[in-house]
Image 1: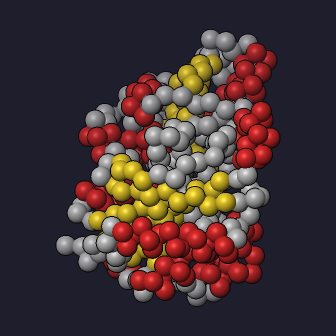
Image 2 (image 1 turned 135 degrees about the horizontal axis):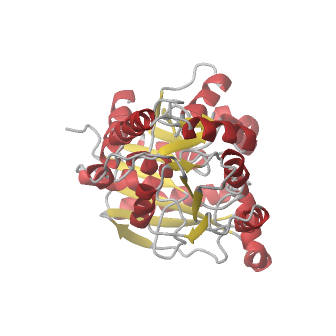
Length: 403
């Protein structure tokens, strides 16, 4: 029986019907599982609104900005709503910003605290713990909520300490003193905090999981000859989707391979450019965006998922690929380093390094069917330990233990 009955979750990113489908649902995956466990969960989704002129100026070049930033840029002001999703109650609170990547003003933070408390009072909700995801604006909002409820607060960090310091400067450590428990979305992120903060607060790794049904339906992958590759994600520069093509051409001089891209983005132009340069019209397939079940269906047909991104916080697609029995290639010192053990349940190479990627592909290509099957089996076992229900229980258990 859980000691925690009521959880107030704070997050600047949360899926809704009026938002693009590219909005990350990662926090919702935890919340809906906690609700299934009998926990009362209320989510406050803090969203930025900029002056109207900002949207008018950025709308014509939104794809270019999104590609550079690595996430979808809204072209309209958000609306304040209250809604329910998978039995999770979500209240959206709007905050005004004048410059992207800046901190909110004290006036805006005070208003956010006021609206959060007022909403919780209206529904007679008193949290046992406040759990924030992403430092902005959670770090600024925590003190006001602690003053109201005298409850512990936990922050799940989605970026390195260097990223946090870039936003908060010398206020960073002072604001972190208000946090009772730190969660980290990956090993590299946790290590960056350990190196930077002497006597760091209690912390834990809060990995995401995949739907349980993907594991129940997973079948052992059959390998004869590795030739089918796949990339899944937004086609942006930091994910280096186009660089996969020259690496494959280097490994397959007879061009006897296929590479399937699932996703949209500015780097489509670079992919088509490489496909034309190397005369690969039959080898390169562009499928655009697909729903999650169709993505899994494509993974079951592929031998290898390649996505050697930089600035990758976690990357659920890696886990979905492992569940499908694919051989996965991710990046050193990025979100999946630590989950993938190089050569055991997948492979790691330097982010965006075509030469290193070529070396890795050659290693995979030269493995025997038995060796490939062993790595695939280990990948499935890893994914089996990281379903949505299991990681949500681990997350809750860590919160209770560290309290």
